[in-house]
Amino acid sequence: MSSVPVSVLDLATVSQGATTADALGATLDLARAADRLGARRFWVAEHHNMASVAATNPPVLVGAIAARTERIRVGSGGVMLPNHSPYVIAEQFAMLEALHPGRIDLGLGRAPGADPITSWALRRTQEGLGHEEFTEHVRLLDAWLSPHGVRAGMGHTLKATPAATSYPEIWLLGSSDYSARLAAQLGLSFAYAGHFGQLDPTEVIALYTQGFRPGPRLGAPHSMLCTSVIVGETDEEAQRLAAPSALQWLNLRRDVREPIQTPDVARERLEHLDGGAIHGTKIIGTPDAVRAELDGLARRTGVDELMIVTTAHDVSTKIATLEAVLN
Image (tube, rainbow, N blue to C red; front, top):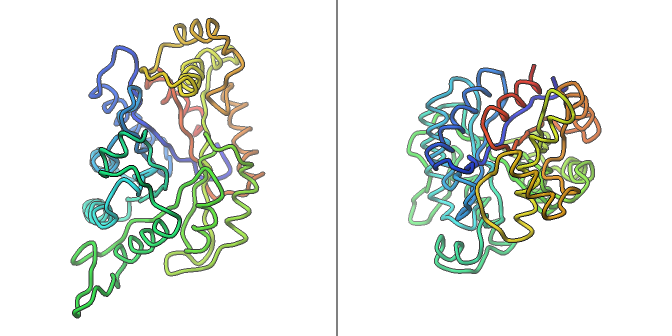
């Protein structure tokens, strides 16, 4: 068990031979396991037009997960704000919070989570949000999801919900130091995407913590680090189970889109493509080794929470990994 709370990120990955319904059902199974095992949060990502990912609509999936779990916080990891009207997102998460009070998180990201063509289909333009526009949209979302709302002129106040009794937690997510700086400036919680980010997480978290300005939502900084994990009974078994994530990582570099392969097929493909040195998962090993590494990571970075994501061919591997981490 880690020295800090542990949460789960899932992408509703689609395995070879499975359907979208299968992938979403597996995510619900994983969420119920996370709830039973005592994980702090369960977040789902937003990706589009990918053969291996069924998590295209976080608000819909968050609602389904929250309805099928009992106590765990459920949220987006994250909603890619450039793809959406910020007021629509505020209304969606205000409604989720009204349905599941005290259990909803709204994680926001600035990346599109899609290729340029898909981005055009989502928002009818290939132009993204600049830093200033993104900051303004986050400020508006924060205000709409608050008791005071936003003065809209003509004596009107614009809110995301007419009579809220509680409000979602807002997090900024990022794989660079931009979101760390912005979260600190706005007094919001910050989650670093260490499962694919290339920066030293210790430095990014320190940048956020040292620059934090208290605000209406938070009086002190609150940080989380996400990393990728796979556990096996032996080191050899863990490496075998991690082969599908390594192949997916290599496929992203090759612009190849396909479902998640079985461990044996993935290992054969990696050998054929000379991808033996590719690692799609950051922490791979036996239960004791993985728990020790996660504990060291939390202590070294000084984060308040950890989040883990597991890319695997079957949900049983994801659940077994979570059981090993949390037990």
